[in-house]
Length: 266
Image 1 (cartoon, one colour):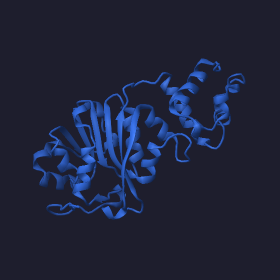
Image 2 (cartoon, helix red, strand yellow):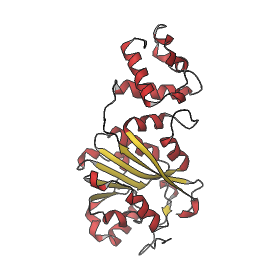
Image 3 (cartoon, one colour):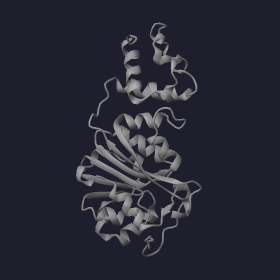
Image 4 (tube, helix red, strand yellow):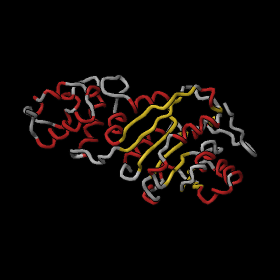
């Protein structure tokens, strides 16, 4: 396994930024190879650090941007990757306006674990332009995103991601593959936007129902959605007797339509 050899003046990982630098260039290439570069116009790398993924992204010959909040990492990248210095953006990715980039967009990165879920939700919010996402996550989060109904880890992020994206768990990594080693294992996943970009329901209501349902995941839908003040007639539908963790995306769409239309299914 080829170990990544940083160039000049190593960047010191910063705990407050959740930095854990990947060691292996071979693994970095495997991650970059997962992105469907032929189906996107722009690639955005989140948190390039010392450029272990960056070097392989450059090889894709796609318009790419490298978003880094750490000024020390920005300085390192500009000194060691001079060809992309004008494509390095020193900014918080979560505050970036993705509509300013040529789309469809692919997002990639060894994501800081403390903001990884927020990165996912930003992708969902921008689902019309984010075609694919390949990223490193805390293993528990990676598995939760890809999990199906009936699992204890299946939750809000599982449903909302799978409503719009096909999910693939690629591989897991032990802590010793990073500097410094995190306290947890890591997992790489890939999201690919589904052809149908709009759900067959009121999407705003769908999001509200999913989020409210899982706030009390052990209770039935009938109990977890009490704040909706639904009529007794609607709550007679069999779906209200189920727990949220047993409902698929299609089930939640169906539930949304029942509530929106005020009619029980037949």
